[in-house]
Image (tube, rainbow, N blue to C red; front, top):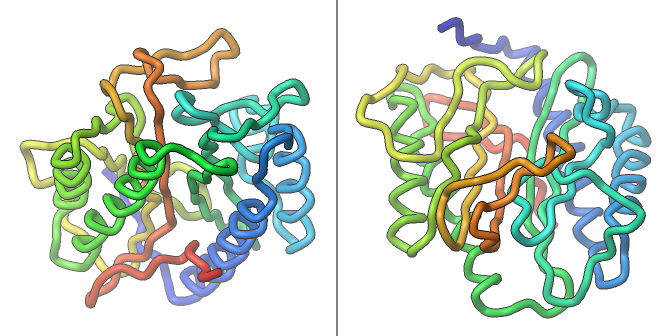
Length: 252
């Protein structure tokens, strides 16, 4: 398994890419409200990304037709934006986006409330997000990859949720998807040793029900098989000797 360690110059570019992406997601999050279409979210996201001098990572990637993956309620990931899909009060919506800046990628996702949501939906969003932070405690030199996986799984399962197993996180750099793959579910082995300069896209995808998923007829949209709610939280993370540096998280 060839896993790249980034140079100081590469890391600086990826910091800039991550800052741009985090800002775009924050701006899109403020636009989420009942009555907005998923197509408009994608259109705004595309314009924002390009306004920062970046290209959208997802547009055209393996044929994906949009810049922002917009996934609603039981849709786990890769929802295709549509003029016909209107967000309604009580929905939850996951936005997954990537940018290319000076040849380097950043990848991140957030799940947002649409208006007032149920306490159950809010808890799912919060637990999914916190599981990311539980996992990245081990994103430091000397730890092993699957310590991240097991911490994410343990936190979600202890809260009564299931971690999606058909989809995983990944390394990231000049390519959107690099080695290593990063499961969010429990692993028996320790996985590779982590070194300073590795850049990882860590992304818990969590279901309120079971972990089984189906693909819809568009061949992109992944939904929970039992149609339970799903949440997604992702950031591009730099491994350092002292702990993780989250490249794509910008405070509001």
